[in-house]
Length: 485
Image (cartoon, rainbow, N blue to C red; front, side):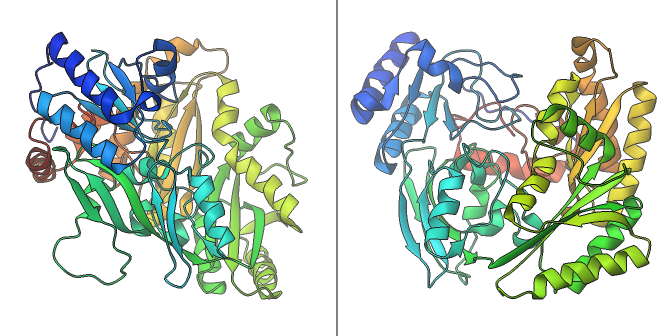
């Protein structure tokens, strides 16, 4: 282990101190901006996977940045811990408070204005509480694309997306969340506001401060607004699901697709046969689009601003040549938007379908793209040896090296007994990832779930640097304690 990460000592304030502070907060945010009702607080103190249950002294919903700054200022004065929260779609417990009941949850959902769209500059300025799907729609109305896209986009919020450095299906073409940000507005742990809402693509005036807060999961400050990059909206999209001859052939096909299309591959997603079986068995309205079963499939999407037939022709030539070369065994190209949605439903339903097969132990890992086939083969062998009958379901973003290596319980096994092996199985998979130079958290963050992994796998110098930054910005340790560092 590289070394344990210790939390700054934060003594819990006395009950009278907390009560007085909550009174000041109530005055700041007004009647619509707070609640202590247990029923209203309950959905905000539990994580999406039902692994973490916390408690909060108050749920606070500020209306603007000034209110956020004032609330944080009160908490800084009194040493009250703050858990920043957006849509609470974190899968690592990053937006869930501890169990002590002396923290406040600072939910930014009321701050949901698009402050500005500049189509000529290809930028959009939005507040942290904007739902991701709404930002996609706002960009589309301006004839622009905001490419961040993930399964929770109908409920997740952009502040949380940036705080966790979200990934999703378009990373291959457009990058992670941090690659889509030009500027931030952040309330710092002492209640001061840093206005870094610059819409510049070139700005070499010192440190790139915004990158400190992207991926920090609310441990260094509260992101309240962001200037986001927009892109030309695709005029044509072509989608195909193909059966590949094997994992190595899938990797070769990715290279061929990038070359043949002039790097217009927007998604390249891997599905094993077991995932397709689960989806077709448990998700209504799905079916296997190919005549015969195969071991591995790839969902390919190309997109272009050229509305002509060139892209569809490129896909047809690409797959025709791939069949001749023995890379592709069979496939189907979507003829219209509806068929494309049907193909994407197969991919997007993988996690949901697994729930019907009992317990599932999750891994969100990445390795170099060139080593994805090796990782899947080695991890599968290790897991099957550790838990006979366990069913690995490796799927996801092979185009950027991020594989969701989920493991379903053996048929008929006791779910609770299987899930009790979560930590042991994580260690097996994460040790392999570390050996291969990969990451134990590709896009889901660290939160509470992976703090020990961070201490185990990151170099001591990196942990020390994180701690110095945390101490410098948040010396009292009030920002999202118990998460990341």
